[in-house]
Length: 441
Image 1 (cartoon, rainbow, N blue to C red):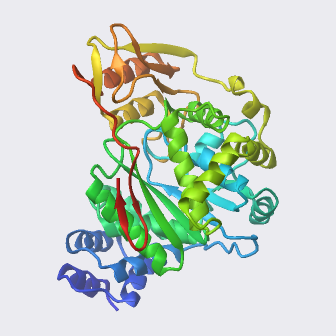
Image 2 (image 1 turned 180 degrees about the vertical axis):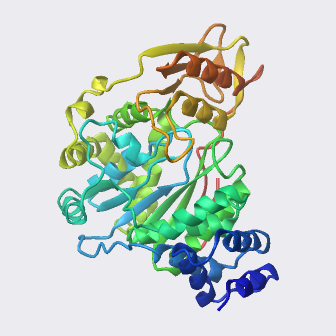
Image 3 (image 1 turned 30 degrees about the horizontal axis):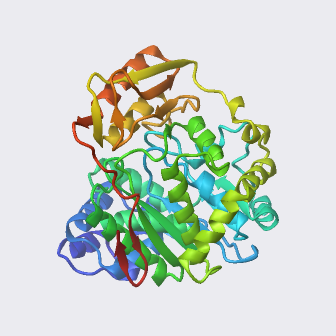
């Protein structure tokens, strides 16, 4: 088998065999296939696409390139969640404790963020003492005892994806449905869950800017999961404005805690209830989504979700007093209030720009080696549909560097589009994709 022949075959639009796909992934991961040939292969896929069987094989090749977790020693149906990202997305910190409080084991491995803010693991490290690196036996023990553990991905999980994604990033081959779907689902399959709920973001602050493209991606991932024996459901949610009101690691942890106390922003609470409900439904704990939703709401309202977060923090060495008293968290020293010159209704927000402002403050990483400032971020006081009066507060910036704050302020001011007539908010849930249907809302 020669890499040259495989590149040529895909370039000419033919279907690749399982053996050919495995040969490419294995060879590139081990360093036997050079970057220039892999780049040509990726570009051939970009233009000629892959069919569903090719994409499924690519997913399994990604997953099999490293460790695949065996979670069989965890009691019950293991359910996982993945978010495609977004500005202000702290849903795992709320959803995972709620689902665990419902009695389902949540054995979740998360990554660090590359972009406007840190990932779930970075956010958890805002809690003093929280250990994100449990050994496997302790990870399993915690899930069996507390129904929840959140840890960083092992170094040898999907090494093929890490290497291939880095190459895609510099060869303009990121935005291809098969390559995106196999990258995401390869990690989910390797993580060992029995059921998977995907939160696919749609809008100006998401990778997928329009609903049709997002549905195509969601459907591809759902079908991959189904073919590989995982009950998979996708929830498509709005990202034309930040989720909740906070953007930044510590600020988002505080907001997650407040949401579990029943005091969080309604959009964040609503989305977390839906995601948790679909996880309960996907695990077949309840026969309808409505019944699953009622159970999740009960766990939120009676405080069991918050209690489960406390158990998680305590079990992984964190200081629970910060959950009980969020005012103990350290926030950046400098506070800057942003006000707009014009008045009217917020018609549109450039959510990606809001995220960029947070990253400039230091909340995110421009490269994998960037150091995150967990204390900085934004509080969003005005969102789409809100009326802004003269000199009214729109955003509060929390930063530690005056020059960075100035740059962030300019970006934020340009991110708002103001109109004279009232603008109604977009629906939070755009669509649900299952193995048998697509429901648009």
